[in-house]
Length: 292
Ligand code: FES
Ligand code: FES
Image (cartoon, rainbow, N blue to C red; front, side, top):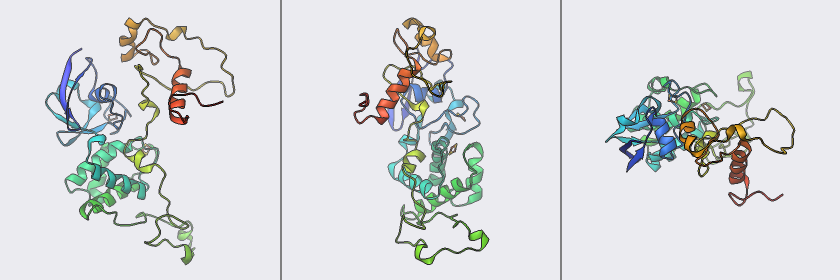
């Protein structure tokens, strides 16, 4: 396999790639980057895979690895910590993150707006978001979040408000009023009448919370979740013959064909992937089965 050398998040790296790969694949599969998401690769229409190449926003699913030679790539992981904090806090405060799949790409875009002083006008933010699709929500709260982050960035990196820009008390549009005793004030961050911060929201906005496609199990080439067609069942055995392959075929499978191949003679079956994932994330001792 040919190699490509470039700077990734400030470090010189040399990684192998296969002909036909795009940069998103290279980053995720060879460099361990998970913040850049695959929403439509290689269509280039959703913006989830956005990274900075030489400081400018670029869709990684539209670039070939060969185009990176000698260039500098920055993913959300490599954005300065202070800027990440401001963006994470702003997205949580304004409710700009829902499932969080599109958000890392949007946050990379926002970091470039902050860097270039273009995050103050809603029109320019909306225009910059043209290339981003969010399946969960409208874009109002995302624009709010970027605007708030821009204000914070220009003012000592402190959040300019404790309440979201668009925070309506249910019933206000029908003439109802808040109880003054529970009206949010600057001294109360969370509590009755206030918008509670979303638990884990900042990690979600910053691409630190893994999705299924971000699962990495030692030796895994590719894995995918499979939903059982049986609502209730006890697994008595699994016929893995269709997924079995000689190790020599594993590399070819990795590209396109088989979704359950590992770098071993015996590829895993779906239940093994699920079990390892579950035990890693839900067991008190990672990697060990949960006690019965
Ligand atoms: S994955 Fe690149 S634009 Fe959608
Ligand atoms: S796609 Fe879910 S938050 Fe945008």
